[in-house]
Length: 233
Image (cartoon, rainbow, N blue to C red; front, side):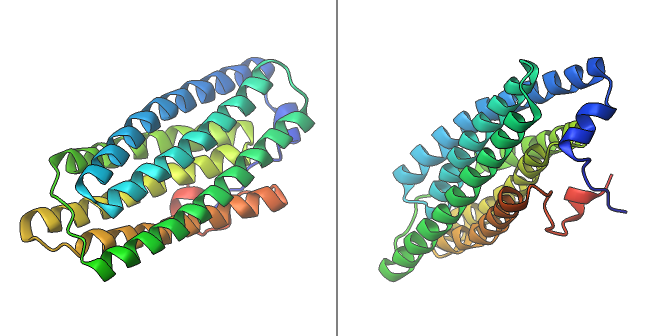
């Protein structure tokens, strides 16, 4: 059974002030945790990715930077509400977060396609790295927890941008599993092509995220991706 988010203005009116303040504080906390994790994720993935010539790790790390930027803007949106900002200002912050996320994700998808094509053409062999494997496992465990927290708070406060960010979190979990598969195939079987292939697999998720963010930025509506994770209670 699906359930749409309440309109932001309606949510502000319908929800008791004390309850909403508590939910906004929880949103600020979970976005702060997300930002800290994204800094760690991006730092490890990019540094190890370039050191080992792993396209999938590089793409995963740059995606973390995109999510870091989007998380920062979303944190700003929540802080605006906490400080008593108007509905119009909050909605403007939500749209800005969605536009930045959408265009950044599309740009990253183009980068990964080009880099993967170059790796296939040159037969670039990435070095095996347990750091990358460990990061992928950690992300696969952490991101679903962040997704659940964000989705719960988004429904309470009627934030389409926070719901879109929750979708990014669960997508990141799927991406980490794709990354893990590519890294392990290269590690144990020496299949160098598994790394750029896994990177191309990330592109599917990036385009889905980008389309959802673009839809929200243009219409202010919640995502229509059809993912069960986005709609089910």
